[in-house]
Length: 353
Image 1 (spheres, rainbow, N blue to C red):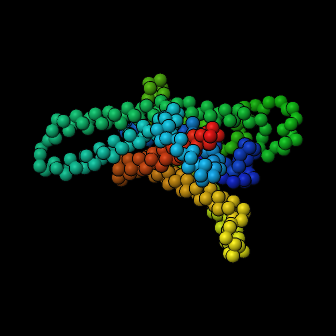
Image 2 (cartoon, one colour; image 1 turned 180 degrees about the vertical axis):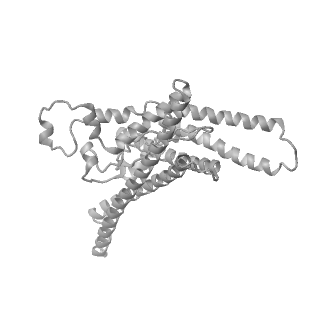
Image 3 (tube, one colour; image 1 turned 30 degrees about the vertical axis):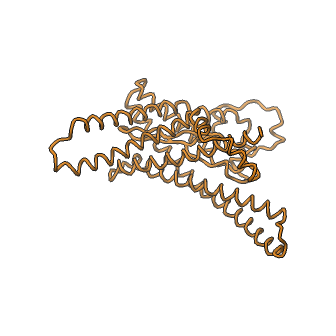
């Protein structure tokens, strides 16, 4: 199932409820969303949550010459290796393979059905190929379910680490106060974190049902509940993504306005001022953030279409739509994960040069 990719690493300072939960962060959507969707070729496809074992994207502020020199030390193979070390990276790779095979089967069956008038039955090798591919898809689906087990530990740890209620002052935090009951701590945790907790827990119940530890009826109920969690988390993610894009757009307008004013004031001067150079670098950074926010938005839209088919039991073009949206979501989330791991390696390489 999916943990939404709440893009906390792209936001600027923002005072509010979630900042009280994590005072060291800027405006955060859902820093704990790291739970990708659990997908099966025969059973309902569940949530692919964000949340992305994904490392926080490092702030990579390097000169262009330094960046080019650093990039020569970081090969693509190293980035893929770092991705596949994490269970989230493997999940993305397996998901791409899984849905690529499903797309192939869709086209294969479509072509085969158009040729039925020529032959009464399919050749044995074709039946065997379809059977093997379906078995492979089921295997990748089950493997992905197991990779996502115990993702509820991340939001649970964050909730347990909460020392004070939101909006508490630094003065009150410094005072020695008795530990609060767990229920009290949970009630004051950010709603996205609570949603991630129950979502990941229901995913695990569904997986344990597939493993045979729980009844099928219990697993079906957990899967249904997980679908609703995924739908709500996706809608929340789209709202937060829109807020962040608006903030980034306002900041871009301010920087562009300063650049225009500075260019008019220094039109007769050949060299650019230090302020202009800084604004140009800031504008590039904001444009990159907006680009990845757009990628996140499209990924969330794919998830929304995907999970809506299960939640609302839509039948029309079910397999085709779910297959293509699942593949697109997998490619987009893999691209985001690749960029974050690459940024981490570039930062490490720049420190060693």
